[in-house]
Length: 375
Image (cartoon, rainbow, N blue to C red; front, top):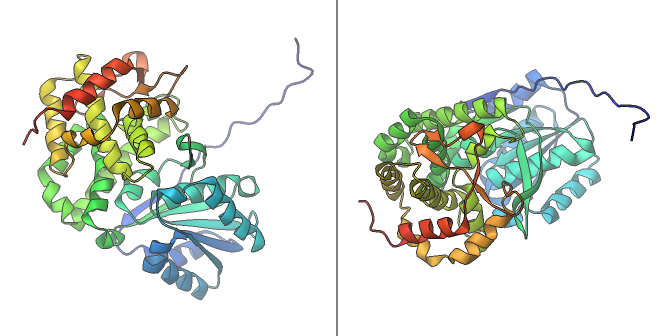
């Protein structure tokens, strides 16, 4: 069969955007916007918790600069990251006569960023947005790279789009209000990146865990900078996760499955930590990772209160069944990112995700669940 004609779309120009990481940036945003952009409307999207801490103040500052500002908020938590919330927010934007000259500001953690980014990707077939992460997890990971999505009953982040922000503005001062559990939640994503890509940074975390958990601002900025450098470099090479970007999913095949079977009561970072333990143990059992290196990972996570024995509370068969909805699944077979050393993933012929038999996954799970702690 021969086509009657052919459509030729010009190659899309390269996308680039600035990432700001510093203390006191929130109060500088109105002037920065005035200096760089001219939008008709600004929509600040946040959750009810962040609205009280930072949203109302940011809106007041923007209005003082003469902007027409709409503040939209929804209940905090992963349970809000769904199509119903997205439609409600979009409906309010339409009612407020938002258009293609509207700028969205995603003010909050990963849920806010994912929702706002997906709205921006689809509203009027695509409008501008800026990520303003207020949690360590969002600053380190979800605000960078343009992944946007919502959850469904079938799994996490299965409906979404790649839509890059105009900028990422991370005010490290926001971390002062976070409880220790949420600092750990974000730090785990940094550890994930370091374990797969940067041994020196992993050793830095090991050495300074106490100070990091004590919210030492200099060290937090250092950790964020190191992690964002890794992610930006990977995204520059593989925006749409065709290959290399898959390494950012180390721990996530199991992690997302745990989130699903716990109905998202388990925080993302903690789920990924358990996922890293299982997937590192799989790597060991396949003869890829030295057992001593596995124990180093286990010891590091134990210092954050993540113990392999706590996996006993989860049903292994339910977990394995849930992995079949992972985005890396091919022909019904879940794929895993595996380690061959600390700071290096297993990537023969530049393949970064690998099919693993369910029996091996189950054996790994049971082995670490009933093993003694390393401390």
